[in-house]
Image (cartoon, rainbow, N blue to C red):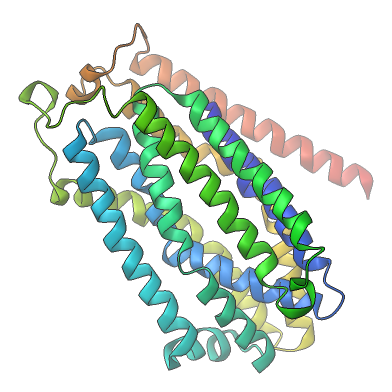
Length: 335
């Protein structure tokens, strides 16, 4: 659980501030750039972000090399579909309607948003590949390695933001500063997790799953298991695009609307910190469920029961509420 908390807390909250800082440092059109990046990133996380939930497929279904090949094949196809979708949004009338007309943004912000959305086309695939292997590693209790991969992702992105801020990109294409940093971090994380898989697991698991491990998983089973989780995640992530939509439309696409969306881009990760990591509790039960035949492959002396998991869930909820209330008290006392 701790590696996933680190990923949510560092990557999804603190790191977003570093990426936003990379845009805010631009001398000209910083507000427009931040608003455009925020719109593109939130739409990307809503439309194709649920692909990252394929880590749960790796956690539950991947018991053999053949199962892993099927999971990777699913992600290759889904990544290709995501890339085509990003391209359509960037160049077609559909993208112009969703971004320009629906959000009531001006031509400059709309053009930058669609361009940023195009640049992000390959990110969902890289993210999903990384978390598919993270699920396999978590299944075999290599949680420390998954945590190291997340921390390496953070470090790589912060370093590249600092490097790119001193390059010519600041003048030529400032949008590429956070996006290239995002890609470099994802590349480091994906490479770390894939190497960890090949070093620790690939030679241990069988070529095919036997009946004692629940039989061989099919692509249909994987997708049937994945789509409800993806729907839940998409439902959770739709809030930010909706907020951006209503704020932009309410202010009529004026400069005030651009500023408001930019402010939301900068502040949303901070508000997400106290509770965003709670969704990762859902990965605890599949990893420790002794009734799951696929867990018989994993050698562990763990005595975790369903009661322990319930108690752990309540403790996490109480901790999240405590942190949120403390943050509210600090904010109110500072006014």
